[in-house]
Image (cartoon, rainbow, N blue to C red; front, side, top):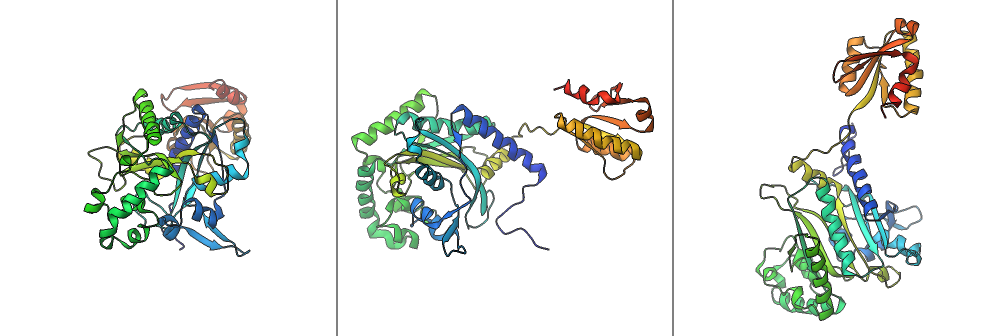
Length: 422
């Protein structure tokens, strides 16, 4: 027997309805915010992620699925969505679109080679948003409000929005110099990743999972101490918008985005439930990027975005005991008795389906009792029984499965009967 690859999952029919519900809900919410869907390839040039995600990141160094294609080109299964969306924005010259900023969202599979654990897979589904072409505190606030709106729309209540500013390029430069000076005397006590990042990307030491509890991390300088007047003003305006929207948030000066192109607003949405004992507490994260487009050969435009895992959203709903309002009913099940009745049912089913009626019949030659049990399993709202007598009299009884009541109608009026119920 061939088993599923490690770190992947089959989403079975009983679960796909929940996935469809979530995806449809997200599509509806994006329409409210005037964001348009974009779909990019599942694989891209490796260089895109090396430059767009960062050579020094764990994603690029340890987690990407990379291979040479038949043309000897290095190809990578996408590990995240932002780089591909920005690549598409540049390639299709979306900066020339009269509707600015360009508001995009995506939803699809991503791939990272990492240790499997609850809520984390090597193939996972990521939903994300990118608003490109405007540097304005109000759109930062819009994206933060959208994050809250998404999770609240599914009934989640125990949420904590954590925000920070990592300033502009000048603020970051000064801050990085202070971090190098702070960590240099003790860097020998840190993991090899942190040691290699000291002079290339010192901010990433702050979010290292291995060394996060070290005293030097706790006493490290805070980015907010290095914000210049312009960065402080931007951050204050974002917070003012959130206050005006009655969106609660916490500030965490150690919340950073380690890549050079990130600036100003950084944020994470976390589970804030004292009874929660899950391994994953961060639901989604994002931030403003003011240098990514130029880094990928595009215009000097700015953007902000976030990404969330559908798997983590489902896990949070499960832990909160929230059941989605998934439609699971079925309009009609046709019970047949005899060969002629079965032939008639084939034609009737085709006509019903072409008129928008969810209908099915038996295909295993079960007795009437077995067919009725199948109707129950499908949660059919109605059943009809067709046999020789019904065909001869052109009459059938429609049974309401919830009440047990029956109604007699002409057999050739079944389609019209259900169309009236729409």
